[in-house]
Image (cartoon, rainbow, N blue to C red):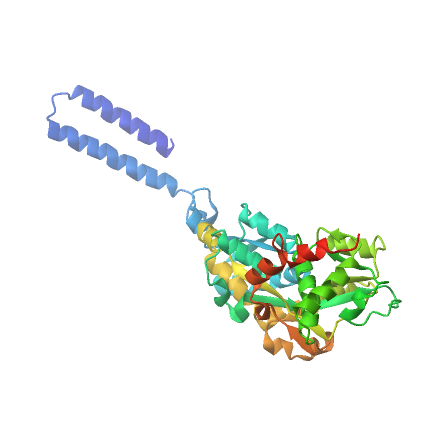
Length: 381
């Protein structure tokens, strides 16, 4: 007879006994009820523990808190070109975290255009960590109340974990003889780029063009004149960087494409022949990492999320970024032979901070009626 059957039989006997002994005083009745409750509690405890200690983390009766002690899931949302780097880095982190904390980390990963990823997180994609193309996108998530102010001070380099510069990709053999930014303003040169109103990388492209004038002694009037000439040479503005690359590489449009240096290096590693130039005057394309505070607190994943972000700054992780074409944020790694051999030295490097930060840049250049809209309005018909 099972434990539950014995318990029910015992309760029936007690109930019958109490019916026959209706003259018992109230004290005895209370004692009887107390004993029934005690028997029931003991039986329930025995049943719940019947599968033994092995069920404490895996059995159906294990609590969510207990389960998270051995397993945790992180959602990483990043811009598209970081995918190869993260796929190399994540297994190293998982192995190290398991060794140090005896906890298995499973990653859910999402890659796409930085602007699209930003909107997805704001609209409800519950990222624990965001690695985006520009700090302006991270700041939008902050303004939505998902990331606490001061996120960039929580980690090294103001939150910048990977870097690149702008590269000019030409047709094979560079038939138009493109060597500098100035060559993009020539009448016979057609340039392919995405629309900075919709693409993060296109904003970097615009800023690189503007910066090339300012860093060589030109004023804003000269910069406006130059950038207007260049955008006059853009036959169509694509929605995002991937469409721009397809227009250039697959559809044969244009003479030159502006892209991240790391994208060019990755393409070469895949066996593609790519002719490109890294101009001596350039812009530091800085990609920030941040923990999404509201989501990690909701998921109970803050410790491991912060651990992953910290891991991305280690030499081990930074070396993986280098292998896949990103300039390292870790200065120790930046001085290694692997890094100095891979990346041509840039003589004059501009930074976002020199232009007042992304909020000021967006307000000046990319809001409705800003500099970019005015340049577009002046384009030749």
